[in-house]
Image (cartoon, rainbow, N blue to C red; front, side):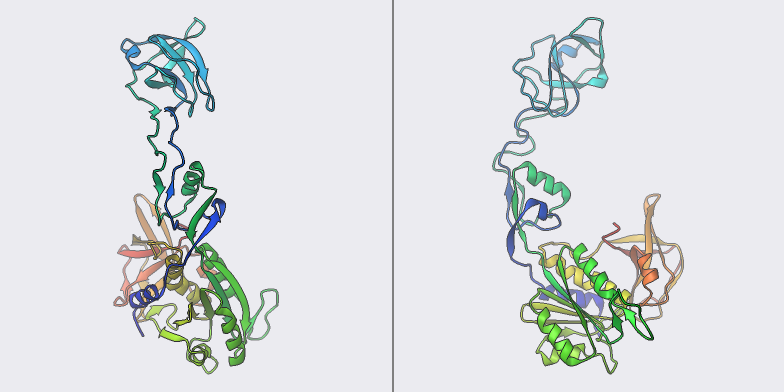
Length: 402
């Protein structure tokens, strides 16, 4: 059995960034750029007003209030055909081109109308360049505005659209196969009887895989027979990642690791000193990375966050692999008798300048009700049996909440 940080390093060492592909911009959110994106224009392409107000000459505001003649109005999308001379101003809208001669824009809130038509009084001085974005001040023609490795956030989508990128080159999103194992499983449309349970793991993993930016493919349920396991695993080897849930413990019908060996998978580890999720197998078959996850739902979901999501992030070209970990004030005592590093489902919140965390009451790694109410994990180190209330601890934030 290896420690979690050792398993994490092994997974990252065996994981490679995927090849690049060209996709439409609207499909690029959450991906990582695989080539530089350069601007096809100067931004802004003209001196641009950043406020609604009056374009004027700053020197005309030495004596206040300054009464100026309004010689025109400039809306966004229209280019002024006149220039501003001393004693003059033009009413201007946010985003509109600043007319020639003007060297400042004063906000409309710093002005008032007069009894004379086409005049305005400016109430406060403005320095040269005030409220004007100069020509090319944001980007120059040909300038790289988003280098290789940039994460395509919604804001990045907006930038790429502004520089005319209808398509972008990004690292390919991994395809992930999902197999649930066990004679006890039934589909969620069925009513379980006797010792049966619904196959919730495939659905939870599907959602986690999608949230990580990968493409899930559910391959179905493999019964506790080597022939079925072998058949579904071989189908799963067409994907970049293959996840199996269940069948990785020490019971007579826990057959996953046996089939791994029969198929010639290279196994890197098969137990990790973490709670929940000790019986986890990590292997490779050809170009496919394979995780044998525990069958208990909370264990499977937790190991996904600790080991699988980092692998997906690396495949996608990210440089940050782990979920965010913050310092937090523990509000209630927590006991850890497992002898393993413990990731307890928890609720974390930010209040009065600090994070606070409390572990949620749980009946174990099968308690999906408690886990679904959590937004984070309280981390208890392997060498600690107890965390005291008010102690400063670590909490791992789940990305769907933070």
